[in-house]
Length: 289
Image 1 (cartoon, rainbow, N blue to C red):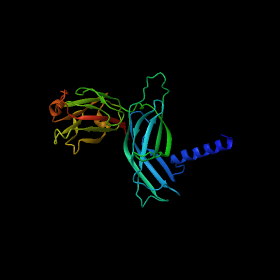
Image 2: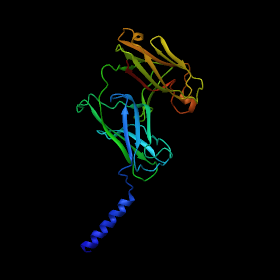
Image 3: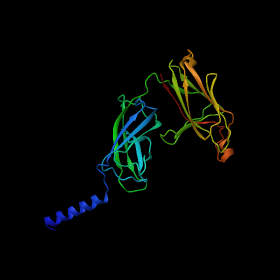
Image 4: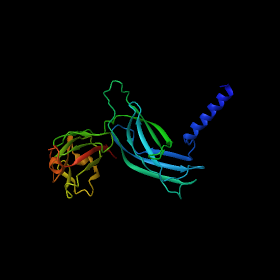
């Protein structure tokens, strides 16, 4: 095969491969993303997305989804994600279209090992946003990427120690509902008193297939913060705790309890004979002004 024929064959092969991969070099979208909280290990943050549609914006398709991923580069592990539907509709998806929205309480798991001899004081996480079509072979369309530096929680974030009444942690992944502890009738956690106003986040659940009217009781010390029957199986509660309510003691007890417990083996079969109450996915505290 002479050189001219070889060059022609290679060029045709290149064209064929290029046509087989749909690549969008300029999707016509300017995107900005902001966060509500510093980049700490084991924390919650709100993520605000701002879309600005420009000239030659890619055509709207209801099949598009937005991927949002936090990649821990050192381990090549996805720490968190916030995949969601494409904003707008076919009428608003055009040049000049603008969309702004906030997704609250994106959970960053506990991934930093401060005692690792190779730990330098921070960990780099790559935050990426783009478009994809689930189940399609079309290439993903990247829209936004940023390097984030995460550090351990500062000293004014109180430590939480699980006390009596908890079963061992169960874990299936890194997501906010991928690890949990069951309580017995009542379970206590010991909070370090940092002499600051605090915001308490409780992400938990009860099994509505067992009891429709199971009550949850949350207490700080002897004070009942709330007593309620969750409307749905999973629930989120946020409590603002005043430093005056904490007193002067070095530690204060937080209690999560219930009026009803159940035994999984009796409810569903199997060999889990624990007497369980509330499924707690996360207890999280942060200082507030």
